[in-house]
Image (cartoon, rainbow, N blue to C red; front, side, top):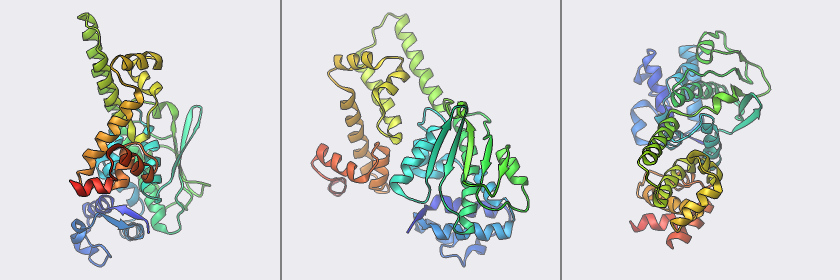
Length: 329
């Protein structure tokens, strides 16, 4: 059975209340409002049923309106990983990895074609609630990308496979671009240059890094190999939710060729691969101390594409499986 995070289920209910409903109106649902604190996830079909009920009661566009109220923290572990993306479009890469590893409720795929990038959402609308949830997903995407870049970027086109609603007012306001229905696929399209935009987090990190280097250069200080290793570790940590980063990608962030970076790390007696493993082991041990984090979530946050691969690697590092390590704490 597929599941949806309780935080998303709660968000939909809470927004319905801001639009005039009462918590008592949900008492006949399988998971009523006053029991939300007792669960961590809900069956996907319960989530879709909620969308259907609210669309009927509150009218066309509710799904889009609730999507506009989403915040990065509402997405739990996935949202936390978005905060460390260096480019806006990386949220789709991380989402694709996350749902492939933890769930099959969403399947994202990015299709780049020179100036534009089309993000497909492969989730068939076998019931109306799925179609509405797809609308909310794309609406939330717009909000998240604007928050990450601190700009007002908008998509250039949005497409849905299902029939159009009776009123497009909220769709036009949310997406600010052509919104098409009865299309061959569900997709949201952005200018590639917008998805390549550095995030506000990346700008802060890069600026801090460059300022420190300028200060060191003006004082005639040789950047120590140990300091470079620390910087590399921090960049690796941010990149891992997108998968294991390459030395080329890390070097680009630091303004070094991979050959130079390899040489400077060697001066400190380490390799790039050493630092990858060090951060993976360090992060996984910290997260395993948090009982609320599932093993699959930890595998995602440490760059693994399969939980089984994470289990094998962790046992090689520590001599225990993740579960055995957690039980020994």
